Image (cartoon, rainbow, N blue to C red; front, side, top):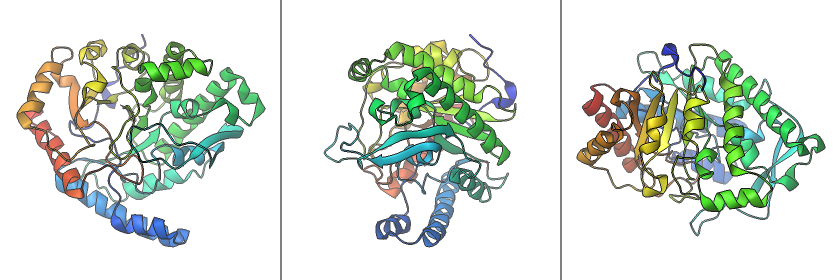
Length: 375
């Protein structure tokens, strides 16, 4: 176990959200029309201002750009890395829906690196310019380092040195370490890494798929924890790191199921992550018992009891009962609340309305105020 608690890195607020929001109609229309890049950027800028206003209106004090410039929660960031390219594929991701994700896959084409001009640095600074200290804090979500490994098919490793799995893992960690520092230098003090594949690796089907690729799923949990900690361990003391885990989110569907039992010790005690966004909206996520492994101190779990997959609004009494149950395993002071996932992990969005989204975010804030007297 490492020393994982630093007082300066406590979660800034009790009420939070994973990051993605339904794309404004103007952005969707511009993307569908394939408008020129400069015109698209201007439309995205205006749409993000709308999304910041939406978050402010709900009472949230943590602001994101809604991932409004992205098509996927992870592929856009990955494709902007040096040495990793997104290419056409023959298959889509395995979501439990009749809808199909666009058939693209990452390829390793050269030495991995985080470029100094990675576009998402500018995405963050634009957001930060819209959020005053009186409003709260600006946060950006990026895929965690495990995404570059989990999504990489062995036959797509075109750069021969990375057929050595140890070298590939080491270079992913180095690339992310550079990314963390670059976001800090850009002014980011709250960075979220979406490392969802810790949760996937509890699913029996996903575990068998890994074995078929010659990978040990239990060792992957250890490897992913090592990569994550390598990336964040040397960050400045005033930089808060969040981590989101879920089982897939595309048009209100999912991929995996299974509890956090196999990953809890690794994520809680072998990483210095400060804030954990944990999906808990259905039985697919398992029980709350793994929360007992959270070390006492300043780490916080943002319990995802509120779903983004449907517009049905959860009852305040039901939410209070869920937090009463969670407090049997972890101190209530180390809990907060956020929806279980984003509202639009891809540009297509979940099967909900903007009004549903707003009411869900308002419920996050009101629940935090009711339980802790703060948001």
